[in-house]
Every structure is written in structure tokens, then in C-alpha cells.
Length: 141
Length: 141
DNA sequence: GTGCTTGCAAATCGTTTGCAATAGC
DNA sequence: GCTATTGCAAACGATTTGCAAGCAC
Image 1: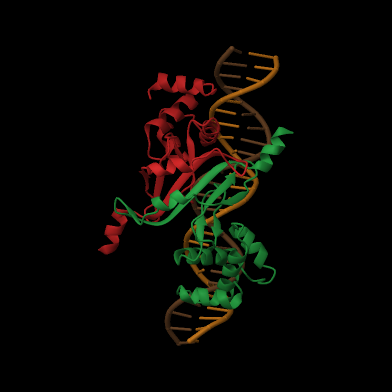
Image 2 (image 1 turned 30 degrees about the vertical axis):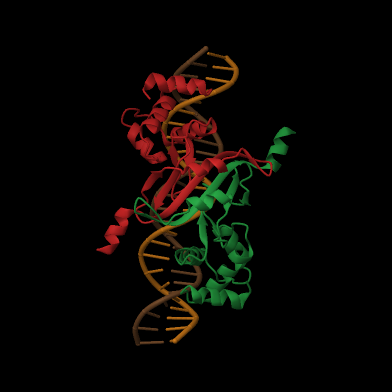
């Protein structure tokens, strides 16, 4: 999304656009690499010199509450964010901590429900944890 | 499991049983409530007064590496542990942070694989995030 | 000028590290 | 006695909090 599209997107989701909100939303949308708070902060602080980590935390929390991004907790070290809110799985390598997007088998759609035992489900996440092919190669050497 | 069964279980998984390892494994096995490090530490420190948090961390990491427990990262605040290594889903309430075990739909078994694109999958976890029925009731008041 | 948003600095809390003390064979 | 395990204290790092300053309508 370009700047105008991001602004429209924010307004559609009842988020008042500010310089910081637009920049952060745009960054997360254009970097589908599951960025962390620090990654976002470091990337944007050159163009927004007064940006603070607090604002990054606040904005990401807001964006998640308004459901325009999702929080990924697959990594036990830090929380990650994903502007791709369509159904897909995440794989994390226990060795290099890389995260890879994986297609969700068609069958998974059958398990998506809004409630189970009257518990309201906002979000369904499928995580795979293991060792990636690159780390596997290195182990063999 | 009782103490003897825990010891046998540890040995079967190539873990030398020590007082601390037995106690921690036994606790996690008997409390299927996804305990945190602190919960385990607090519960055991009365009977093992010299127990340290470091040891709890070390032992849990060892138990996870030997695959007798699994680490749950559904909560962004802290890591949780589960001695139930059979396939099941977890639901976390974004409001009260309670975690509820949920059955895994039959279809999910079809998506369980050991490798995807040569990435080795050790563990598959399905997480639901939302608001539990108790918190929903309170919101209505 | 009132209310929302931002940003700094300090605090908090889960987790890790370095290293000395201890236990087991 | 040697090696593995434990435990303390300090360090670390991600996240939160309190509050003052800035911005927008």
C-alpha cells in the first residue's frame, strides 16, 4: 500500500491517521517479514527522528486491537507483527529463529470457528516449530 | 505420575534424575494448567527451600529439549509449559489471560507432517486467541 | 482550551549469564 | 578427584508506566 491507501485503510478501521500511525502501518504492510518493535523503530527513526519506542508499542497495540495487523507470539524472545491477516501458518526455526510463512492446507478452513464452548475466538494461529533446511545443512557439516 | 513413574519416565528419555528434575517434572505432569516458571518455582520452593529460579529454567529447557514437555508461547508475557504432549489446541483469553485446552478437530491430523519444503517440523501448535465466556459475561454487566 | 497523541526517563519483570559451591560416581 | 548439576547475584532486554509536552479540532 502507498501512503494514500494506508490512510484510507486506517480511517476505514476507525483509526485517526497521524504521521506515526501512517508510517508504522505502512512499514508493517510493506515488510511482510514479521518485524519486531525494534526493527520497526530502527527502520523509521531515520525519517522520523523524534519517534519513540513507546509510540511504536502504542500504535502496534492499537492496530492490533482494530484488527488491521496481528500479533505473532511464536518466538519466545519477542512479539512480532504481521499485516497479513489472511489465514496462513508460521514456522520458526529453533536454531536461527528465522520465521517462514507457510500455506495453510485447505482443510484448515474447516477448523475456523467464531466460538467454541461460548468462548469468542478472534484469531486462529497455526505454528510450526523445528529446524529450517539451512540450519539442517550446517549441522551435517 | 507418582515419583517412581516420573523417575522411570526421565530415565527412558535419557535424563539423569535429580531431586530437582524429579520434582519439576512431577509438578508439570500433575498440574495440567500450563504453569509458568514462577508458578513452578513458588509451588516447589516450600518443599525444596534451596531451589533457585535458574534451576527451574535449566530443567524446563532440558525437559523440552528431550521432548517430555512442550513450551507454549501463546501468552506474550511469559512462556508456559505443558506435560501433555498429545495433539490439542490452546485458547487464551485476551482479557483474563486464562488458558483453556481445546480438542483438536479431526481434520488437523491431516496437516501434521514432519517436513515442509525440507524444513524439519518438531512440533505443531494451534492457538486460538479471543475472549473467554466468563469475561464476555462481565462485559455485558 | 480540551482531549487525544506523543515521547522521554524510569521502573518493571521475565529470562540469561558468569561463576562459585555442591553433589554424584 | 572429576564431571555434571545447582544456585546465587548481577546483568540484560523487552515491555510498561507516569507524566509532561505537543498537536488538532
